[in-house]
Amino acid sequence: MEQNSTNPYLKLRIQKIIAISSFLIFAGKLTAYFLTNSVGILTDALESTVNVVTGFISLYSIYIAI
Image (cartoon, rainbow, N blue to C red; front, side, top):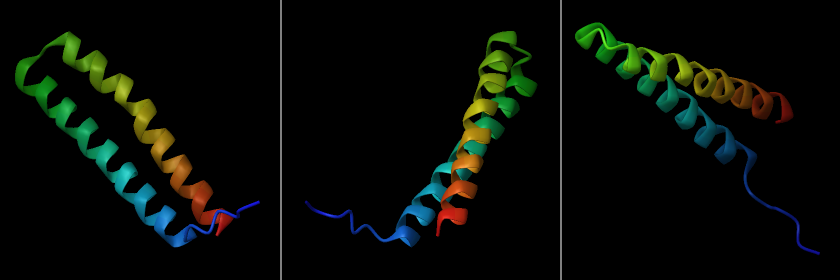
């Protein structure tokens, strides 16, 4: 049986990129809402908050696991 020998610090680095990317996407959607006043874009931005929170919770979880 093989062990997963992936470097945990690599996982942490990748999760940092994911968390920051999700925040930047959220910020972009929020900016688009303020520029267009579109309720559709606002709902999409608010839905992205779930991705941002999940990204940072995962980052914290990996940090604690290391």
